[in-house]
Structure formats: C-alpha cells, structure tokens
Length: 358
Image (cartoon, rainbow, N blue to C red; front, side):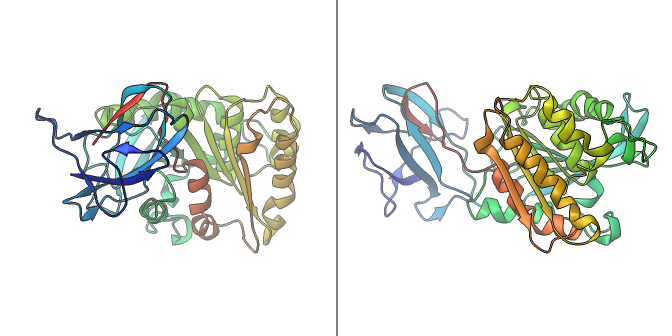
C-alpha cells in the first residue's frame, strides 16, 4: 500500500501527488496498514489531503481524504479506501411488519461501493427515503419511471463529489396519504398518521437494518438523514424540524406544503427551531399548481428568517426551472440534494494527529 497527497506544512516523509510513500502492513492479521508522518510544529488548523494506492499505481476510488491537523502531536487518523468497485448494491427485504401501523411492507437497502470490498469500514452516513418502490427499479416504480438513486450516488461518489451513504428505502402502502401526513386535512378528509409512521421508521426499520448488517452501520444523529418528494417531502421536513434529536439532515423535494392550509409554514415552523440541522428544499415551476413553487419558497423564506434557526447557512434551495411534479424530474435532479446532504467533509478530531491507518 502507498499514500500520496499534499499539505501546506512540511512532513517527514514528504507527501506528494507524483510518488507515493510506502505504507507497510501491520504485524497483526487485521489487514490494516500504518504509516507515521512527522510534521513541523507550526500546523494549527492546516489541512492534509491524501489518497491511497495499491503498488503506487492503482488509485483508490472516490474523493481524497481531507484531514485537519490539530495543534499538538500524537494520535491516530483512520481512512477506509477501496479500489475495484464503482457501483453500489441494492438489496430488498420483504414483508416487514409494523406494530405501530398494523401493516407490512418491503424495504430497499442501497449499500455503497466500498461495502463488500472494505469490510473494516463502519458506515455512519445513512439516509431514510420514502416511496421505496420508486427509487431503484422501473418495474416497481409508479408509471414505470424510477429515480435510479443508485446510479446518481455511484456517479457522484466516483467523481469525488460526496461521501458514501447507505439508503434505506421504505415502501409505501395503500394508506400512504395518511402515513405521510402529520395532521388531518379537513378539505381532503384524511391524514394524520405521520408521527406513527415516523415511529415505525425510528423504532422498527432502522434497528432492523442495523441488526441485519451486523453492526456495519452506526447510527449517528448528525449523519442520519430523511428525504422524500411530494407528501414524502412534507413528512421529511416535518421530521427534520420536530425530531432534531433523531435526524440531522432533511431533503424535501417538491414538498406538499399546501397540506392542511399550509400548516407546515403556519404552525410547525412556529415550534422551537432545531439548531444544527441541514435542510434541502426544491421544486419545479411548471405543470399542475406549478409544482407548489410559491409554497416552497414561502417555507424557505420563513426558515431563513427564524431568529433561533442557527444553521441557516445549511439551508439549501434549488429551483428546477421547467421541472414538474413527477418521478422523472425527481430522479433527474436527485444528485443535487444527495451531494448537499452528504458532501465530502474533512476528518477532524480533538485527538492529536500522528499516524494514518488504512
């Protein structure tokens, strides 16, 4: 194993992009490699950028690893490269019972490219998505048009535009309109099981996935996201705003903010604002009701002016000019929210830096 890279401080051995530093295997049988890098003392908040290679010729897949060097010496940083797989894997889990909703449904799980190659890696980027039938397979998708989320994520990971993420796709049921709405809408005559549905996701679906994949998935609030479109966008924004201890990221595509006389804007956003959330909102602007572009922009503007919404710099909005309320357009622009919610971030720790493990 070899390591190439660069930093704006001097190291020994000196890293470069032209020739790798050999990283010897550790003497145990853990299939790990370790190198010690010694840096000059003046390195506070400096950034190290590295990438692993096999035989100093085969580059690892995905983005470079960015490491913020702490002020003091000593410590360990671990990275998890993979080399030969550019595509993730989509798996299905059938007939999952919901004690909360008294029904059953299937689940989809997208596992990123490194999952079966680098089995030492524990994944903490996890995204829950609604309407699972529409996400990965045209044969199960509404109207035969799937988002093809796996293709978008694979392409963005390979290009180094985002970190790997595990996606849990939750199928809808005939009771979708009730499950994906958190309140009763008198004008529609139904709605209001949204909190029960979110309890199902939190109490049944996520623990089941963690157990099934043998603790290769670690749920961390800051990296757990929820995303959907239409009513799925509404329930995702609702979950992100009202369950900040559970979800750190919410993607709300063409959200049905019209629901219950725009209750999300008029009531939910008046509840206590979460402090460290990432929100992504979007819509098209053509077709029936212009894809609710006005209601979406109203919610965006309201969020951005809430005084105690501390993370307004992580409020993203995208207008799909010409976009309509359909699976085709959601799939076509899915690469935008996924890269906003899971961008490449620097590895930083209060623990001092001494070694890079692979």
